[in-house]
Length: 160
Ligand SMILES: [Cu+2]
Image (cartoon, rainbow, N blue to C red; front, side, top):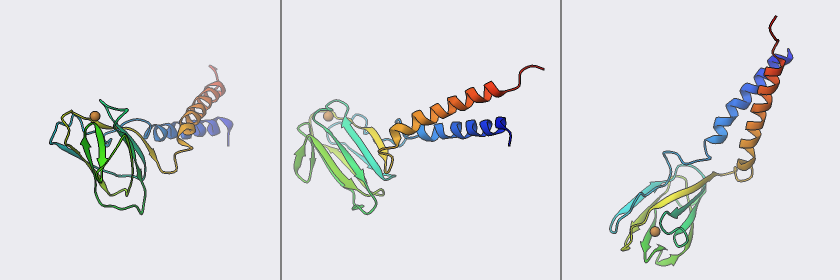
């Protein structure tokens, strides 16, 4: 196989890898986001994928934050989190940081019993198994793409 063809294939593979690496890096349509939650209102969110979902209240990030460890085999019942006195309350225990383990097909329901408006929003989602590779895969894919492009362009025959 000719070198140019090898490099072109390398470039295509690298470019195909970039969108996959980008897919989980930001928020998407399936993010947990209660929007402004007034007193007496609730917000329900269904988990979809195993991983670690971190969240915080947009208005009180130091007092209301937590994470869900979404794991196969964990209880798939719905979990309820009450918002009271600018705290997250689960099973009558108020916490600044609440960690709960749930199954990928479970849901969480946040219920606001507080005077304040809260907005519980996802800050990060890390799929299972991506904890170590997520930070490295994107720069590597980009570097491979740039390298492939440079080599490909450099190797292209000039004008006749
Ligand atoms: Cu809040």
